[in-house]
Amino acid sequence: MDYKKRYYVDTCIYLNLWQKEEVKGMKLWKYAKDFFEEIDEKDSVVYYSGFVLEELMNILSKEKFESERVLFEFSPNFKKAFLSEDELQKARQIEKDTENKISFFDIIHMLLAKKTNSVLITRDRKLIQISERYGIEAKRPEEL
Image (cartoon, rainbow, N blue to C red; front, side, top):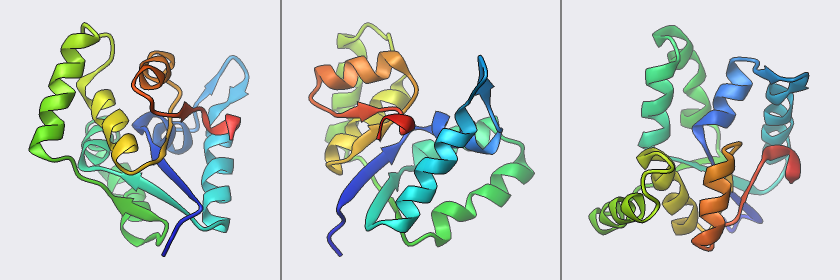
């Protein structure tokens, strides 16, 4: 199937949704919910990785993680993406080049978005700026 839109969603967006996060009166969870509902209605794909799952597993309670991870396993719109050894080495180089201004996992997310020809969906301002520097489109869910 050829998808109209491709997205790679950063861990923070799942957390916005599942933890009902709000900042300064902005309902971040609502933006995330609207984004995922829109994806569900269209011929779009959301890529994720083992790195996203690992981050979620380390942040959420075991029960919450187990109940929410079904999204990745049973939604036809979700596909798992993988990095090669060469791409992992490139991530290490970017980590040095950016002087550790963003986390290694964020660099992985950025490279997987590029590999899958996807828009990176995140709230991290630094990640958005650095993604643009590497030719990767990055947006917040409400910007779509």
